[in-house]
Amino acid sequence: MLYRVLKEGNVPLSLEISETLSHRTAKWLFLSPAFALTAKPLRFLPITVAILILGALGASLARLEPALFFYFSYSPYNYTSTMVLFIFNWIGLFLFLEALAYIFFKRAGNNLQLFTCIGLAAAPLAVFPYIYMAIPKILEGLGLYYQELEIIRQGVLVILQIWSLLLVSAAFCHGKGLRLDKGLLVSLIALYLNMAVLFLLGRFA
Image 1 (cartoon, rainbow, N blue to C red):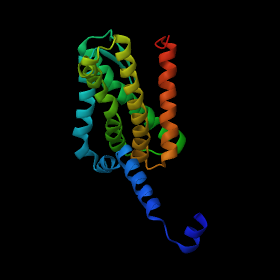
Image 2 (image 1 turned 60 degrees about the horizontal axis):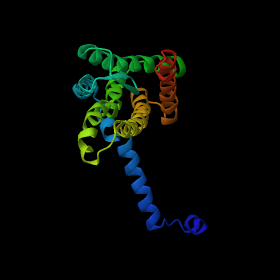
Image 3 (image 1 turned 90 degrees about the vertical axis):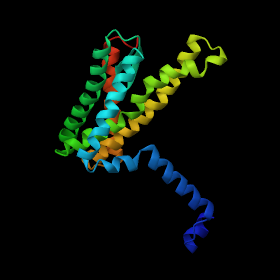
């Protein structure tokens, strides 16, 4: 079949449909239409700020301690400190990516677009606190134990972590004009450092 396609230059309809679906899935998985809007960062900046405030408020209301790609139950901080911590986590990531872009790829400038892209990448984890609070109410009729609810919450968190990690990769690419493979490498470095710091602080004990 592959030989016939190459020889005749005709692509089967099923293959075309599959490629179209894959393209559309990737397009929305990486939020390409939204990232395209960051080409004019001043217009998109209010949305970035709104996402960060939404996440900060959610973490505060859910009494979760934000740690960039992670959340921990029962935050030891008050409402205001939790909100500030969430926002500064993502500002810290922005500064870290700026530093890596210059050190490894000699890319400087376009700071505002990268910041707006990072804000967009925070969206999945910004909505997690609201999902965290909603899960017990949604599943109330099932009579699940607390431990079972926590497993479901952690499962949702893992999915959103992966999505946010992919969006950070896309944010780095859009903000610095680099290929996606470099963005994935940088986002993985950020994730590993995030985990290393939390491990040293004893949060994974």
